[in-house]
Image (cartoon, rainbow, N blue to C red; front, side, top):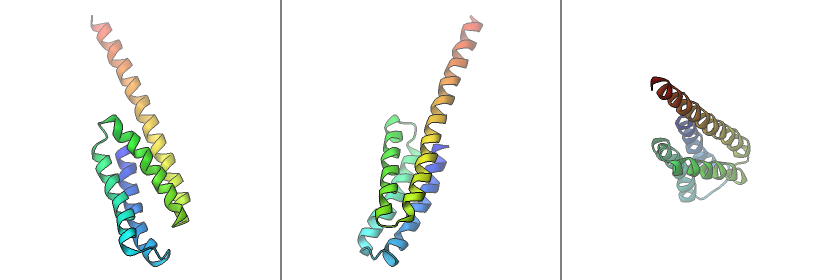
Length: 112
């Protein structure tokens, strides 16, 4: 679920690039670096979620997405939505892993 959130967020962040260039009058090279850079980071992190540090890096991306709202105001709202989705995915995933570990331990204890 977390990988799906990051993948969809990559699309959104990639689409902020033309908005930054045309509407916010951001320099083209800076807009490409920020917009496409964050999109690439999201896609890379989506593939690295087996490592615990990738989840922490995901929270950093969420902060950057919300901060992008200072340039493209709608990103305050979209960034907050993705941050909420990211937090929910992280918390739900951790809950599922805890319950899976407890069920596996109970099964192994039952088997002897």
